Image (cartoon, rainbow, N blue to C red; front, side):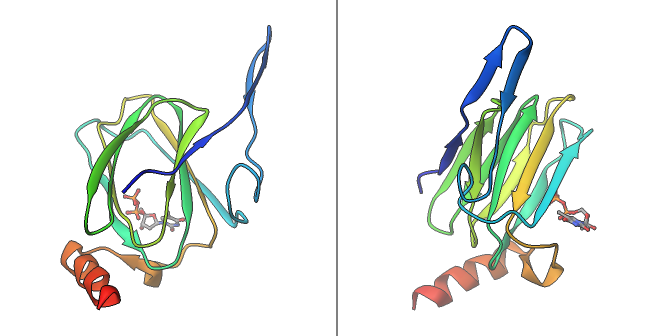
Length: 135
Ligand code: TYD
């Protein structure tokens, strides 16, 4: 599984930097929800779920964290540490976030409102879904 990175153009001048995310341009979906995770302790692992349908894009707009991505066949770990470089979290990709720096602010854009029924929070259920969709 190759992670789908989103590289933002940084607009900068002597006053500082600015990055823009527009729906359907830098992110390939209409943004219905924005949330951000902050104040996470470094020893904590978050996420640990997949979504049936929701598409998301995640950016560490400050600090850094690790993001494990698992499509049921391959596992990869990427580091989010550049505010202008995010990663797509596609449906049916199990993801775990860890190794948060104390200052990390992880911004997530989603194409759907929060819906607990869209979550798969058990890894065994996730792999069962992956294998049943392949047969
Ligand atoms: P949770 O899914 O456990 O966060 P993470 O995936 O980062 O580990 O979400 C924490 C709580 O927040 C949980 O009670 C669900 C709730 N929540 C919302 O109400 N709306 C949202 O958009 C999100 C992402 C979570």
